[in-house]
Length: 346
Image (cartoon, rainbow, N blue to C red):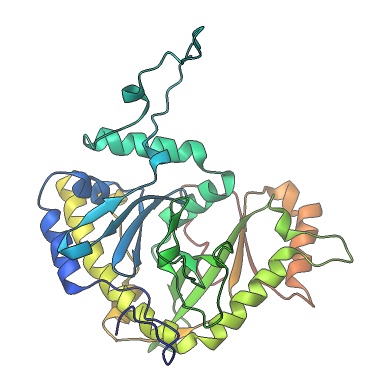
């Protein structure tokens, strides 16, 4: 059963939408409003969760769409409702700031301008790593999932800082402290290899070159090594569950992508900007290809130039790739608008 976890079934089929939810989303897309606007926007990353759909922008969960009691419902973090204004606010002698709260925060959805304001707020809060990753994702049609939590806890239903803990990939049999953040992989993608009847599910951890987790003193171990090791252990143990679960996810993606393209075309989005998925996704969804799981995550590193690559930073990368660490590293450089191979097989 989708989304059920028990002692005898510690791993849930984690990401799938009910037929009724999908039907309701298609019906809602026929009416002007926030759902049409979100689907039409070409720069949002869609992710299927357990009876939920998230839309990400630069790592921020702009909208989380759910289906409680048979009603399509959206939620967002309050920080994305703050209007970004380049203006000076005076503090008067009474200690009050001279600003009208109604002009500082969006209190209702007023069309595409509200969505634009929300994205502007998210941009102000996003760091270089999330911004760079977003650029890579926008031009990666073989990506099928983002912000993938490998463990969940009794805090599953919480949405912390705009990222949904309830999107957990696996339900751990080991109790996890509520205060502990789950391991979270950045990206899952599909790729072809030698066998024509198969497709491979590959997970990726993305880091900007300035991230200190990529380096350590000569006698030490970079933090990313232990992180990838934990991922590998989990992915190896749960490969069969992942393969079956992600086939269901691909089915939902195909239907949502078709809906999104219809809305985008109606909104006048250019053919070049339409959200398109790799044909491999449909082949997995239809069962034309057997899905296999690569338990070895890839480390995607970006945000460096040729001088850095050939200098000290390049030495750090080579150390990660060499024994005893032997990480699978994909060095991208600076992500640009045309970068589309970051999550493909080297």
